[in-house]
Image (cartoon, rainbow, N blue to C red; front, side, top):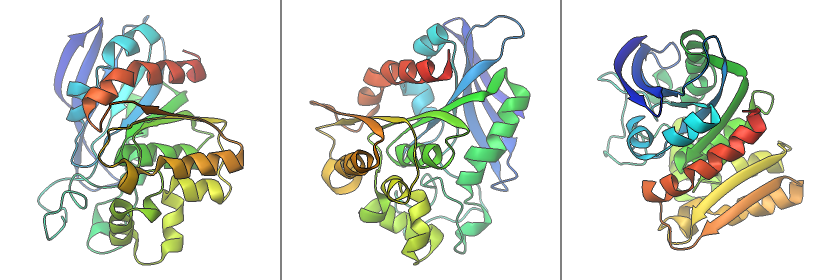
Length: 279
């Protein structure tokens, strides 16, 4: 692991790092905030997955999470959204919603993306193994959250691995990617035409197929321009209601899809995670 930068913040350390990923076959950059803590202590870990076009830097620079993490004693890890490099395939049309910056947290099976687009394995296996070794992380106390495309990733990972992640929450998630244009494009391009294979990466479909967690927390702005066509939170509400999952879904008046929205409610989400992580 190579340290790219470290900065003191709220008594802890905000770092940016790079390593060679076995999952993606590329170098990957990620950020980690470690709050102040007693020597030898192991701290719970919150994973934050970013949205379309983002890198680790978006939440690191604009998420305003460090004060809350310092107060609650939470490590926050922010990976990139896709593999990058000269050998990594991109959308031939240069679209923002597929290819570089749009890995959708799946392990691609379709050429040419299967060579490197293995973000599911990267987020759930590769990077956690590194974090467990290099940081004072208590890997028995993990949770996951994300925004937009990353909200989709956080919900699907949390639903499929409730034994690993004690909590999952999301800001403006793509709740039912199999039923919206962003998701249909990405899942078709990465996983192929068989829509049955998509269901493992669709929060609503996973719940319909039997995936269960005790509770989910979701915030969406009612001024979000993607609300009705791409996010479809009402479908998640219907699925959770039918399955008996305790979903706290709040439509925030006047808020949009930006980091102004995320930063406003970030501390609320972190407190919700901390309560479930025993922090």
